[in-house]
Length: 191
Image (tube, rainbow, N blue to C red; front, top):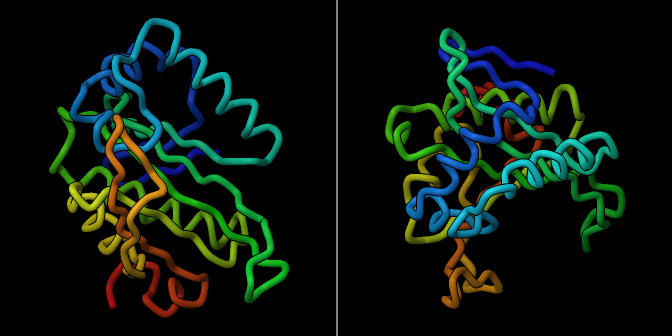
């Protein structure tokens, strides 16, 4: 499924994205802000990741979007929605998912992440019919938190670990939004 915004086309990942993924995700600054991107990002890693994403998408474990410029079809980054249907202490049948994303360094501070996350959240609640979406970012990456807030997520607190990146236990800032909270906010990110 494709999602079109003012400047972006969000579409499924393709093997043809591998060179751009290797170049952008291979930047140490990009890798340092994410939980799962390794550094150095070696040959073949992008293809392996795309194949894994495609397989997990087919099995219903997750939904992936490539962030591309709508007019130029230039690859900017990726968004993942990982399904998490484990029962929680409060709700036994909650349909929830974890949202994560990354944008290549040449495209930072241009509003692309916010422009992409908003419609993906809308997709999560209207098409995927999720009850809740949550996300986290390293405390040392406050820009990611601003994206989450602008997109309509709510700050829920912080947590030390259990995430370790390059031998350092990371503080995480936690965000989430339920379908009803998102609808109340008009799905625009505005309070």
